Image (tube, rainbow, N blue to C red):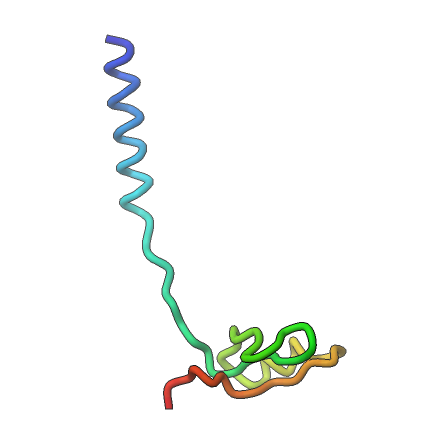
Length: 71
C-alpha cells in the first residue's frame, strides 16, 4: 500500500510539473552585438539599438542588424 501511494504521488508530481512547462519561444531580435568575442552574426538578443549600444559600451564590440531578421 505504501508503494502504491508513493507511485501515485510521484506520477501526480510529474504530471503537474510537465503541465506547467511551456516551450521556449524562438525569437530573432533585430540587433546583434558583434565584435571579436561574438563573431557573426553575434549576440542577437537586443530588440532596440539602445539596448545593444549599452551592452557594447566599454568593449571593442559594435551593434549591427541581425541578418536573420525578417525584412
